[in-house]
Length: 180
Image (cartoon, rainbow, N blue to C red; front, side, top):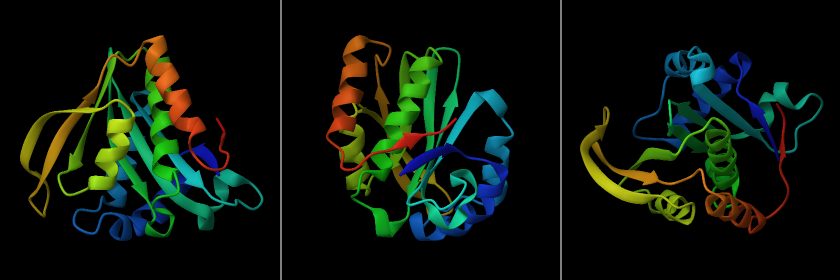
């Protein structure tokens, strides 16, 4: 697998995948465009499986994507999506680990996210990465009205947290290459 920065040419494919990844509340292509337009305040990655030719341009190989908002001393996971055929194969974990490392590099001391209350697999992953529940947002997801748990990991700027990420990555199957 290869992780590449998400670029404009990925958006149409990612938006087309969204309804199969998030059946209730998929993001629109416009929302992804808006996120990428934020520049250095955002970090979006696209996961490619078995890329052929130039990895960043191999749209048929997209198996996942994720985004991070970066603030003064905190970060926020905006989305993590994995195509259903790849669920349970570590794609989401690899994307999360890469984004959390990026948050650390940017000086973030904590990282937050929201997750649907019925998304048990994601909650298990986030817990393994040090996230804990800090609240509940009723009706957060629109238009479905689904509830979300608010989770946060902190402190993420410690040697211990770096070790947690390294250990989590080593436990995953296969290899990944991160391209800048």
